[in-house]
Length: 132
Image 1 (spheres, one colour):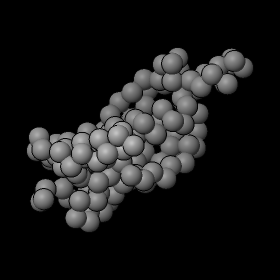
Image 2 (cartoon, rainbow, N blue to C red; image 1 turned 45 degrees about the horizontal axis):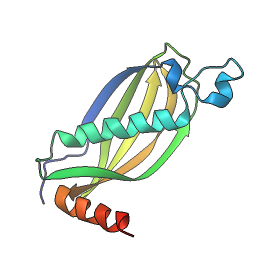
Image 3 (spheres, rainbow, N blue to C red; image 1 turned 90 degrees about the vertical axis):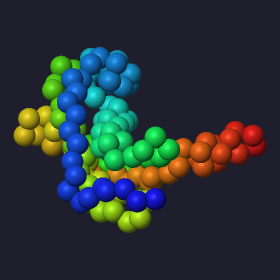
């Protein structure tokens, strides 16, 4: 397996915070900001979309590690920019620096790792777990 993924490759994704992004425990207090799980999901999606540009139809990527700080609130209506930049490549393992920005405010930042895998081997592995 050889793909031309280089350190420095970057993907950006814009997103507007909507009401459904708010956790219930805050909404109940009339505070509506993006939840940490939603922010992390969008960081992972941004990294995956970057890798998808380099992969053939027989391969995909799966996340296996994330270490993120949620540093500032992003209220409903906020325009966010998610960034994923490749900072290391080791065989089929790709390390990203991920960020969530609201203008010049860093809402979240951290490290995310993904592994490039064969679709067929991945499907076999999942089926083994489902049959247990």
